[in-house]
Each structure stands twice: as C-alpha cells, then as structure tokens.
Amino acid sequence: MASIFSKIVAGDIPCYKIAENERYLAFLDISPLKKGHTLVIPKKEVDYLFDLDKDTYAGLMDFAREVAEGIKKAIPCKRIGLCVIGLEVPHAHIHLIPINSENDMNFRNEKLTLSREEFETLAATIRTALS
Image 1: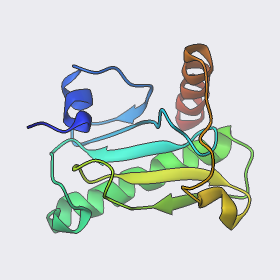
Image 2: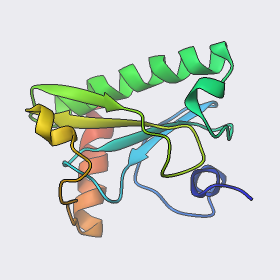
Image 3: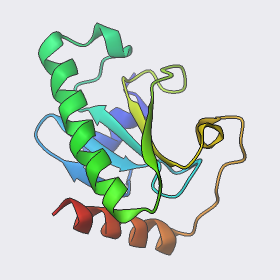
Image 4: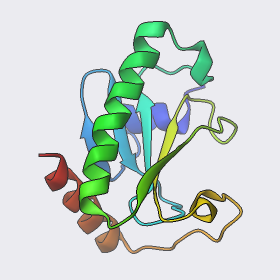
C-alpha cells in the first residue's frame, strides 16, 4: 500500500509545497514543531533512509541542504535542525526545523496549529527565499 507521502507525490493528497525536482519533494509538515518545519522526501518510496541507494541518499541530502538554506533565509532562527526518526511514515524522510535551542527539536513539544492561509503564506515565503 502506498504511503501518505507517495500519495502526496502522486497528487492524490495536497501539500504545501516548498520545492520539487524530478527525484525529491519538500513540503511543510502539517503538524509542525516550529513555523517552517519542512519534510524532505525522495519521490521513490523506500521505507528506511539507510535503505536508499547511495546516489538517492546523497541527492536527498543535497536537496535538503538547498531547502534548508531557503528556510533559513525565510524564518528567523539560529539554525535549521535536521532530524530523521523514520517511524511515523514508512517512507524515508528528513525533518528540517528552524531552531533557536535544542528543545525546539523535541517531538514531545506541543505541535503548532496553523490555518490554511498561514501555511500557504509560509510556503510562499520559503519558496521566494529559495529563488
């Protein structure tokens, strides 16, 4: 069965897209820890990050770096934290989270609730910063 991320790639489920190329996709997390919390995925569905072939893995990291640079320009923060947990969705993915302290990466923290308009504005701001 296709993961929710594969359904997003296929266009069956909408997302707040940040960046995309033929192999990778970045979109806002709909249950973010911080504004700008972004998920970066390979379009090819592979459950576990370290099961990706070396080329796809390296490409995913390069794509994530580019996206992180855009997030950093768009969202005031000290750094962009990178986290891989891999248990939530059976599709390899990276969390990019604007952070000012280590606690900002704590997944036990309360998630933000944003309106559709806030997500759309945030996505547009990050996309512009990537340009």
